[in-house]
Image (cartoon, rainbow, N blue to C red; front, side, top):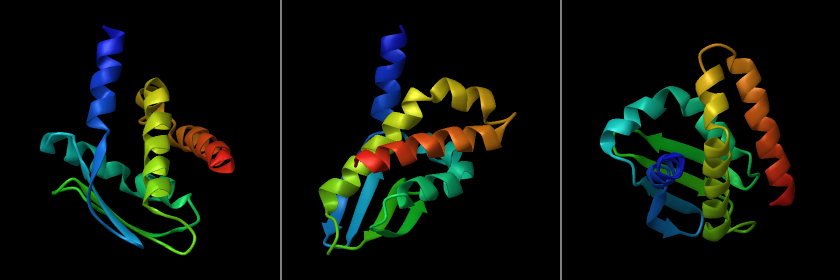
Length: 126
């Protein structure tokens, strides 16, 4: 049953490319619309995580549409690297789902430090 839950969570966290031109990429969530409003309170953290990638210049999240528009420096990176970074963020979130559930309402500072450290470690390998 745990495998099934993880599989469902992974599918809900997938994105597809709606539009892409050098310097801009628009992603659409595969999650049902009812999930979007549940993610909205974490807007600041989501934008910060995406912006850990130095080449990212701006992140705009539309929770009504379930889209993320990312503007980036096309001279320094490309669509594939942006998508790979999003996948890395999702992977870290899924790996820490128990901690997120446990600490999101009791010790948000600890949780932010934990996740930021893992993102920093991954960006170093990226």
